[in-house]
Every structure is written in structure tokens, then in C-alpha cells.
Amino acid sequence: MRLISIIILSCFILPLSAQVFKIKGQIIDYRSLTPLEGVSVGFNQSNWQKTDKNGRFEIKTNSSNIQDSLKLYNLPYYYNLSIINLPNDSLIIDLGKIPLFEYFIGHDMSTFNYRWYHFRRKRHARKHWKKEAQRRQNYFNKMNAIIDYYRFVFRNTSYKIEDHIIDLSTPTKD
Image (cartoon, rainbow, N blue to C red; front, side, top):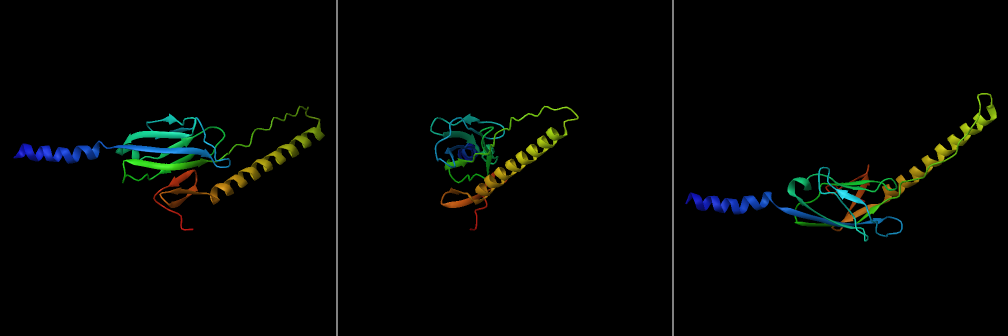
């Protein structure tokens, strides 16, 4: 009798701890809606992979990783995202199309060569770098406004992107 109960318990308990989840989706550029190849997708500790030429990824993971955050990296040109609180109600989690936002302004390659007594050149350089700092700030303000406006849709529910995070436990109210 005891052997039968152990067998029955192992049939129900072991599969729960050994469940393998499949997380899949497609990474796209938010503006052109084209797939992004080579985006790194994975969890903090393991299961990292790059998206294929169609921007698709498929990660198999266990239940302990599903509690971690899924990270999306495409350095240096895009806004990196983390998706937290993935649901564990299904063994296949299809995130659909996940947008990545361009977040790279470029580098100003200006140089100013002057000696200590070239006051006009120093003043010109200060004005230039102040103007460049303002240009960069305006770009990031514009991109942050676009990201703030955007809503990620998962299972017919919309979610806001806040501080590089999509939290699937808190849908937006608007």
C-alpha cells in the first residue's frame, strides 16, 4: 500500500517540479515593424540565445527561471527591455511581437584644438558642447515620450513600459 502511494505521489509531484516552459516571440523594430536579427534574449543566469533572421526566438526553461525576468538586449542602438512576472498557467508562452525602440543618438566627433590664450576658441567650444548636450537631451526626451505612449499587448491586455520593464502582472488602466 505504501509503495502505491509513493508511486502516485511521484506521478503528480515530479512533473510539477520538472515542467519545461517554452517561451517564444518575435522582436521587431518599433518604427519599421521589421524583424530584428541578433537580439540577445534570455534570463539572468541561463538560456541565452540570439534571434534568428526573422526576429524570432524560442527558449525552453524550467519553472524556477520563469519567475526570473526575461531580458532583451541589442547593444548599443536599442532600448533594452525586461519582461517580468511571466505567467505560468500554460507550458507555451507566446509573447507575440515585442518592439525594441531605437535609443542611440550617435556621437559628436568634434574636436577643438586651442592654447590657453585662445579665448574665442574656448568660448566656441563651450557653446558647441552646450548645444550638443541640449540636442542629446531633446532626443532622449522625444524617445522617452514615444516609449511612454506605447503599450505592449499580451493576451488581449495592454501593458505599459516603465523604466525598461514590462510587468505582466499590472495591466494598464487606460
